[in-house]
Every structure is written in C-alpha cells, then in structure tokens.
Image 1 (tube, rainbow, N blue to C red):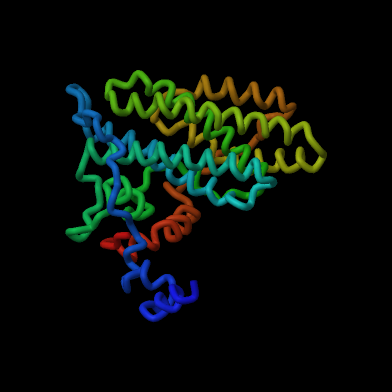
Image 2: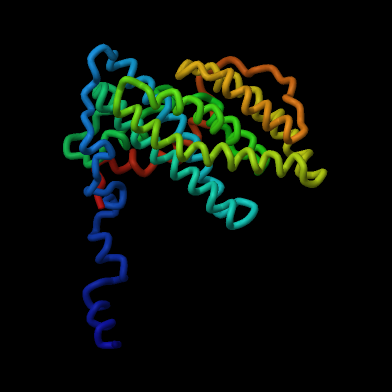
Length: 290
C-alpha cells in the first residue's frame, strides 16, 4: 500500500492536483446538461403572444428561483433534522420548477437570454439565473427578504404556497401545453408546501406562549408585502387564496394583522445581496467547465 502512495506522491503534490488539472475554472459549470424540456414541442401555439408567454414564465420562474434560494439557507439551521430536510426538499422542488419555467421562457423568447462569450457551456436557464442583474428579475418582493426566525419562514411559506398553488391549478388549463404540464407537475409539489406551512402555522400559534408571540410578530413582518403577491397579475386568484388563508387563521386562533402594504421600489436591497452571492462563481468563470 505504501508503494502505491509513494508512486502517487511522486506525480502529484496533493490528491487534488489530478482533479483540478491546473485549471480551477472547470468547477464552474458542467458539460453534460440535459435540456429540461427535451422531447416537448416548445413552439408557441397559434394565437398566443410569445413575449407574453415568456414574461409569465419568467415571473413564475423568478419567484421560485429566489424563494428556493432563501429556503435553502435553512439547510443545517432548522430547529431539528426533520425540518431541515423538509425545507431543503421544498427548496429543491421550487428550484426544479424554476429551471423548467426559465427554460420555457427562453424557448418562447430567445432574446431574453443573456449573451455569453462564444463557447460558454452554460444552458439557457442558467444564463437567465446567473447572468441577469437584479433589475431584470421579475419576481415579487415578497420572496426577497432574509428568512428571519422559523415563525417568519413558516408564515411566508404558507402565504406563498397558498397563492402559488392557486395559480398553478389555474395554469393547468393554459393553452400552452408546456406551461400546462409544468403547472400540473408543480401542483403536486406545492400542495405539500402549503400543507406543511399550514400545519406548522397552527402548531406555533397553539404551542407555547413564546411560539405564539413569535408567530404574531411574524405576521406583522410578512403581511406588508402580501398584497403585492396577490396583485401580481399572473392570475386573478385572490378570492380562493384569501379563503384558505382565513381558514388557517381561524383554526390557529389569530387575527389578520392590520398593516399597511409596502409600496415603492420594484425590488429590495436583499435581492441584490442575495444575487451577488448566488452569481459570483458563474460570473467569474463564464467559460468554466468541469
């Protein structure tokens, strides 16, 4: 055994040299990507406006992308291992939805996709994720703020998933077969997200004095951007969303907070900070492969 180790050491200064090959940029992107829409007819159906379809997919995709990143920040930080895994899985579901939706947006309107140096291996959905500036993102501000404590995350997740589930249920009948299929797949995932958020919301409300105090504080934190979520224009689902939210509030025994909606800028500073962290490797190595 020592003989083999010595032979290896003679050729490599460390065990990592053979992996890097002298070019650390190879760790930026892979080269064996599969098109997430492979096998589907991505032509825009007659009668649909390609730009409007792309915009719809981009808004839904950006919501999922940004919020998945926020939820992923709970990895190793949740109250216990079970919730750590649950939140990570929800983040992965949303990331998968983002990939499909961004790919659909790119196929419908290729001009949206950032142009990279010739030879870049970055697929179109990753170009949209990693090479747009914050002002080009179409997500709602509701998904941008930092997580806060667990009660804030649960409250935001409940409201986001309730709204998204209603939107996806409506989009299952969309005339674009690709978007309809993406929505149908997402409904199954987001139904769990909503139920997970609802169960924990009620648990926190009816738990200890401290958990209830934190939940009430979370409502005050999250609700100022809730109206923007309902008014996105993706689909008019306000009524069905509010019915579900009111039911959960009633079961939890808490009242809807009396807070004013936050107006103003299209995005918060939190998005800029998040994108700077998320995009740094991709932007440093736009031609990188591994």
